Amino acid sequence: MLDTQPEGYVTADGRKIGGVLMEMKNITLRFGGVVAIKDISFDIREGEIRAIIGPNGAGKSSMLNVISGFYHPQEGEVWYKGERRPRMRPYEVARQGIARTFQNIALFEGMSVLDNIMTGRLNHMSAGFFKQALWWGPAAKEEAENREKVEKIIDFLEIQHIRKTPVRRLPYGLKKRVELARALSAEPSILLLDEPMAGMNVEEKEDMSRFILDVNDEFGSTIVLIEHDMGVVMDLSDRVVVMDYGKKIGDGSPGEVRNNEEVIKAYLGVSHD
Amino acid sequence: MPDTMLFAMEAALNGLTAGVMYALVALGFVLIFKASGIFNFSQGVMALFAALTLVGLQSGQVPFAHLINAIFGTRIHYFGWTLPTLVAIAGTVAVMVAFAWLVERYIFRHLVNQEPIILFMATIGLAYFLEGLGDVMWGAEVKRLDVGIPQGMSGTVDDLTFAWFGYGFYMDTLELWAALIAGVLVLSLILFSQYTKQGRALRAVADDHQAALSVGISLRFIWVLVWSMAGIVALVAGMMWGAKSGVQFSLSLIALKALPVLILGGFTSIPGAIVGGLIIGVGERLFDFFLGPIIGGATENWFAYMLALVFLLFRPQGLFGEKIIERV
Ligand SMILES: Nc1ncnc2c1ncn2[C@@H]1O[C@H](COP(=O)(O)OP(=O)(O)OP(=O)(O)O)[C@@H](O)[C@H]1O
Ligand SMILES: [Mg+2]
Image (spheres, rainbow over the protein chains, first blue to last red):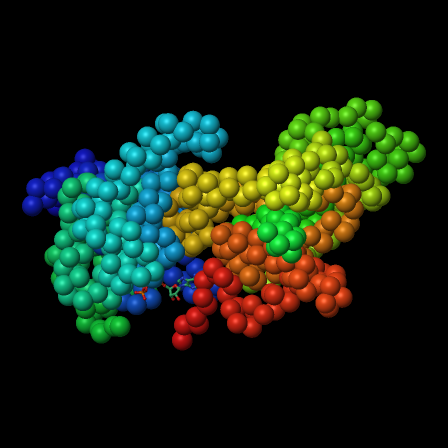
């Protein structure tokens, strides 16, 4: 099997997948009596698209929240770039190069699309307050450089026409795309996407799938993706973790997962939504 | 030009200088409210405390002198030196920043995700605590504050207006300076929030906490930042009002004047605070000028509140505030 190679491998379509970038070890997360995640382990390789699937309430978002530091598991360890990560606040995790989107979209509604995406660059701005106040030149130069990067992403995701529009006025599908742009503008090592295609029509879904593939291809981003739609997952991802009631019931390539008895029983066989 | 027009203009100009100060105090509220949803009841007491600290540092007062003397039987009150105004101001700014840090560290950090009413109650507690702390630290007697700006009629304004209109306007030098300094501070706050990294982070936090965290903004840092800014605003307000009428408890009541400004301008709008402040400043002087004699004077005591009441009836979100539409 290709994905057991420690140094990485090349996929059938010629993309390079590297070694392990992040590893979740025996994660358990409880909310009072509810066990949202039960002793789950899996890893994420550099450059891959890693999907997490499962029925409603399976614990997918909780897992993403653990990775991004919004939730703190009672048990287990998170290893990132070969080191055990201590308990961190969400903003510290973000500063380590882990960007995310939210299942229910969290944008700055009052700001323009451009300003929203610029906030993704905040951690790339060195100029502190005093330096900016006293030393206008370099700060302005830095702003221009960041702006250039952001414009590239705007072009890439085809949202030039709404650059100056306040996010509040955008339809749902475009908001999802702006949120992806903001996460992307941080040039993250890992991009976490919580149901980027939820609530979209077929055409929008196809667009978003293409963007995700292009992002992975063009920027070499490692992507962790939560998705309900089995078809989409099969098309997009290199490896899939399947969760059900907080437990991991499958882990492997889309083909392997699709043929896994337990997965068929728990996930594919029963209807959800 | 008819005399009434000139007198009205004079009143309006004086109202404008007062209005800038109202705007500044209101801005202190807006900053904290936008970033954290906290209505900071202690803003007025912060102004008093800042002014007390400024006088104390300037005159070389020993902090907690009464307490120390009571415990140790000593009789110390002053260090015996005085500080230049600018140094004392810098020292007070440092104290207000430290205060902001302490408030975040020991109060609001423990109240994250609480209801707004709980946070509001916490600031009421903070107000009383700070009032007491000010008393214990610097003494409760009325103090004179001299920041080196002369008081009384401004000769320049008098001469200028006399040359133009043949009638010299009366404007207080101290109030002119206060308006100028407040104006500069308001302007720099706007520039800061629009054009700096921290300013952008501040606006992000004001808009959405989750999203702000996800792009790597520390909410704690932003909270300390807004409380520091509110502390500096309080210092300027306390300094100017204190220089005019002495540093005493009534100084903390200037915050009450900010309430109608906020209702007019909207609690979340920086331009709203500025325009609201100016409207109330000018409005109350003009109202008093034209209608004061008819309805018996002293209208300045209630005009702002009446205007706010009218606004509450017809435009409760204020001039610039976001319209609140309940989603159902
Ligand atoms: N902040 C929280 N407080 C309490 N319980 C929570 C919290 N977040 C998640 N849960 C619980 O954890 C379990 C897993 O929820 P989670 O949102 O992770 O599921 P999910 O797989 O993302 O579902 P969906 O497909 O509906 O988004 C659920 O029972 C949920 O109620
Ligand atoms: Mg979810």
